[in-house]
Length: 149
Image (tube, rainbow, N blue to C red):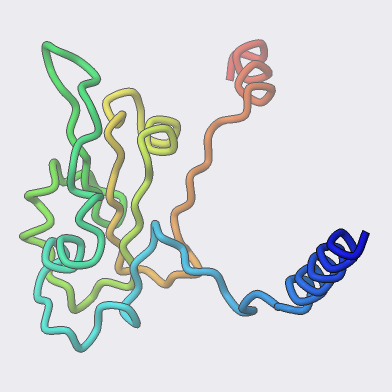
């Protein structure tokens, strides 16, 4: 009886302590977004240097999506498709306002089937105009096909 009372008391104290610990408040870090506040003053010159140093996993392909023509991570600069990740070496970092990574599902929904490995979007526009994954809604697409739009 005495042992179980001690155990219950210890469990109650542990539960009370766990409930009193508050998680950090404030903005959550978006792991798919890099901003100048994160990469300024580090001596980087190109977008490739930033991504390689801070999010190197964005540069690697994730498995084989096709044996005949395997996909590559695609790079966009202000809405213009540049090509594979090597093209990031040609993007000067000074005017860049953000770099965003889209996983394969989000990139495919936004740009098409040849984006199964994901996409890196580099922008010089304000972050308030940030490109976000916007997959087409099934109902909207069905209504357009019925209306012939």
